[in-house]
Length: 224
Ligand SMILES: Nc1ncnc2c1ncn2[C@@H]1O[C@H](COP(=O)(O)OP(=O)(O)OP(=O)(O)O)[C@@H](O)[C@H]1O
Ligand SMILES: [Mg+2]
View (tube, rainbow, N blue to C red):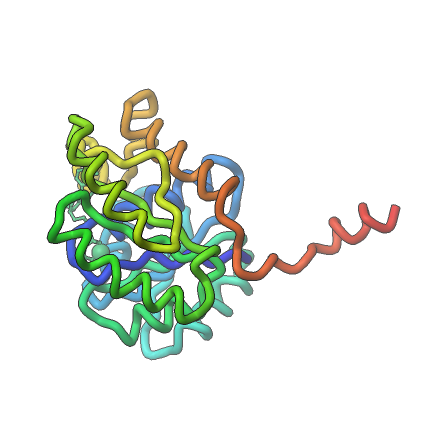
């Protein structure tokens, strides 16, 4: 199972949006995707209640540790799991970064957003996970100048920045209101293409901090 922790000290930058969008993207691509909602706001749990589709599997932490909740998800067949985390809560950000195979640092494009990236970047770097992490720019404007400035500011950090940004588009909150993601509500939209491109880039350009255990079928093929 690969664990993706979605992190940001700043509130409202789009952690929960990224979690549910990537989980649905993984589902679309045939993976058994799950979400661990580690945020007391329970944004993803609420989204799941608005949702008719039974997947992705959504699990809350409850009174358990994050590791115990992950063990439940693995026991239920999860192949990829996305952890949604709260803002302003360093203990949970630390714990989620610790259990992550890949850390995704979400930020908006403006100075007030960018100046908060350093706090999470330091946690990821202290865990020696910078090469297993990436920065995702969300809520970007349609015009490119602010994005160019943001990219330039983000070169300070060891984590690479995804070349595709997620544009601020109303399709995202409209989809959320219906318990969906943009890929399900607007399959041919720009928003959908951006989510698919972000997921593809993460899979091809970010190396998990540990390789998932080889499955019996892999071993059988290797032995043949
Ligand atoms: N790219 C986008 N385009 C339009 N709206 C967006 C986009 N990303 C996020 N939003 C909206 O912004 C609001 C905040 O997003 P979200 O809840 O994902 O942020 P968050 O980082 O999880 O917040 P919190 O820190 O409170 O957990 C939501 O209403 C969401 O639908
Ligand atoms: Mg959230």
